[in-house]
Amino acid sequence: MIGMSLTLMIENSGNTHDKDPAVKNQIPDLKGMLLSELEELVSELGQPRYRADQIAGWLFTRGIQDISEMKNLSKALKQSLASKASVAHSRIARTKRSRIDDTEKLLIEYPDGARIEAVILTDDERHTGCVSTQVGCRFQCRFCATGMMGFKRNLSAGEIVEQILRMQQRLAPVRLNNLVFMGMGEPLDNYDALLKTIRIANAPWGLAIGARRMTVSTAGVVPGIRRLADEGLQINLAVSLNAPTQELRAHLMPIARKYPLNELMDALKYYAETVGRLVTIEYVLMKGVNDSPEMAIMLGRLASGMLAKINVICYNEVKGVRYKSPDNETFTSFITNLRRQCPTVVRRISRGSDIAAGCGQLCVLPDAE
Ligand code: SF4
Image (cartoon, rainbow, N blue to C red; front, side, top):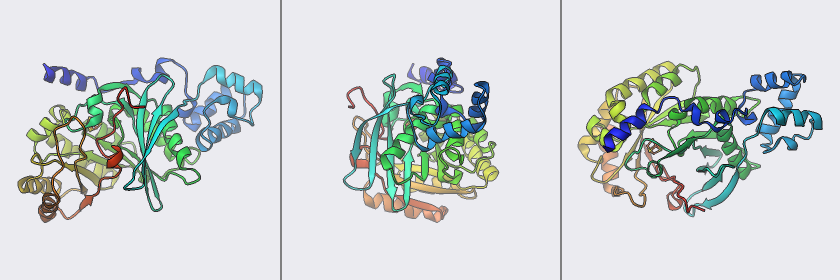
């Protein structure tokens, strides 16, 4: 029964555009618009093209949350703009800073009460925003706190951009210079909003973050990987693999029942060859589950011969989940065995684990505030 309902959810995971609040309400959200769309809008209002540049400046450089804050627009223009469009806004409901590293987790709340977590990671000159694309997640990976929340709704492009702007506000005057779409949700399950966000984040009139400084992390949505490869963008792709066999992967990550390991590996090769960039294989080590020497050898063989690097990280324990992190000796021996098969292996250190900001730990429960 569980298997059946899960299959149904994965079948329905293609276009969930109808759950996009901006689309549902039929009110365009300025923060989810490309410059060309802003130009079209101002032209409809009988305004010159440069007004679109001014509006983009207010939205993406200053991060305003209401049309009334656009000070160099006339009152009449602000009123007609407000009759045609809205501006996504949110509030930072809570922050938590790690005591062990320079990581901060934000709880962000949207006007309808939807809440997500976002994480800012700082490493010298590198300021990375870990972005959520959905409220919850439908994919139910067994080890993941977000999966335990279930799926609430997609975030619209404007809401995702707004989330990045709130992180930017928190960091100011320092600027975010990296984005990883690795927060709550499966980015490729909210494809249109993700792509719009990437285009706005990458544009000089938008957030001006280089494409090579953005990474999309997926649990293995094969059609989304192939589609992204064909977009002509230079963004990085990471896949949360976590098992070197179809059987184990399907057990840990039910999405593998729909998109089996062999199809996933073919899609990763296609991405790497089409975009010309290394694909990152993320492997979270769980004690007694996927940390044996045999698994290391199988994983190395899977990745050898393709443009890929493997990031190995110890599991961040999640309350209510039975998986545990392996000891240091097992971690080291896994890496050694893996490197015999595949030289590009990175031993990753978990960030923000004391504030549940690590991979797979993001979760908003009703009592989160
Ligand atoms: S690992 Fe990713 S895809 Fe899987 S349940 Fe968590 S958020 Fe969803």
